[in-house]
Image (tube, rainbow, N blue to C red; front, side, top):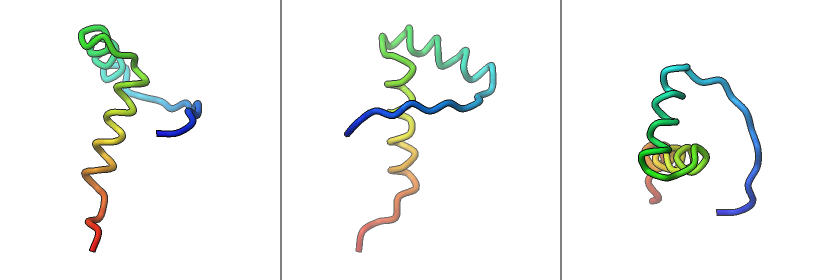
Length: 50
């Protein structure tokens, strides 16, 4: 993927709590889950190549 950059944001408390539980359940870090979610979101909204 490339170099990692640090950034901060605000997130709904209930979403963060659920994300922390998911991280424990999947044995992944919150960062890994966020990268996975962002990649999916970008795929979802990417324009098809012509």
